[in-house]
Image 1 (cartoon, rainbow, N blue to C red):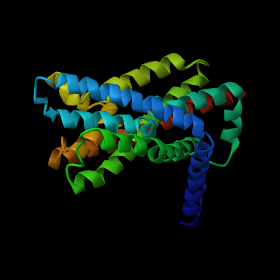
Image 2 (cartoon, rainbow, N blue to C red):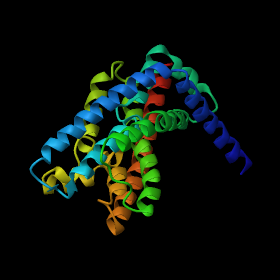
Image 3 (cartoon, one colour):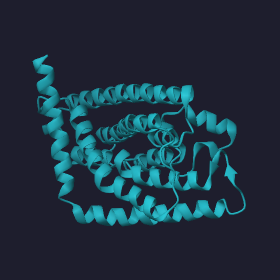
Image 4 (cartoon, rainbow, N blue to C red):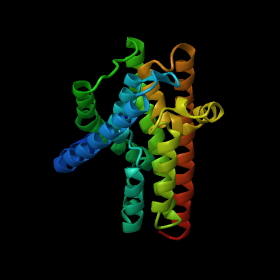
Length: 272
């Protein structure tokens, strides 16, 4: 038990250092914040134009849609949907740093995961909440559908970060086989942005395709937390989507570990 606690403290320390590292790049965060705000405003006005002659579209009114745009834009860096972690892993492979990391008496996958979680926590406070505040001050918006929705939003958001991390981790590990992973990263990120319901709600998709998307892991990257917050998933449906998020997080974590095992085996066979 003591050994398990010590190990947990070690990984939490990695998360803390990652959080502190992001604090050193305030200018980059400010510029990123401006970009995120710009795209939120653009998306909000697109939705406002869409609703100019109609009240409800696929269960969303205009305030729902604006809130959806604000929440997804606020979550974008917290979840890490653009896969920054994968690029860092690929760079560590190219530089040879990964060999040093693998020699450390730690689990490499957990090491990278907790670094990402520390980064996610930073962006939640210093990117997500400010964007949310801009939405609250300057736009009509909806508060959480219920206290239950608010409480479950946060674990769902954490699961979204874990799912996205797993995709990013597997993309980065591909660098053990192909040195340049930018093409794979763009494909995976593109699928995540579209199929996760980040750009538009899943309910806007054709009925059959939307139902299909709800069974894919991508929807857990963005849409599930927002739909819970807005009350679009409620009761048993909300529990069902949370369970799917948990199952996909476990499956993708195990698949990521399998990728890592194959990559390390390749490195050892080659004498790296």
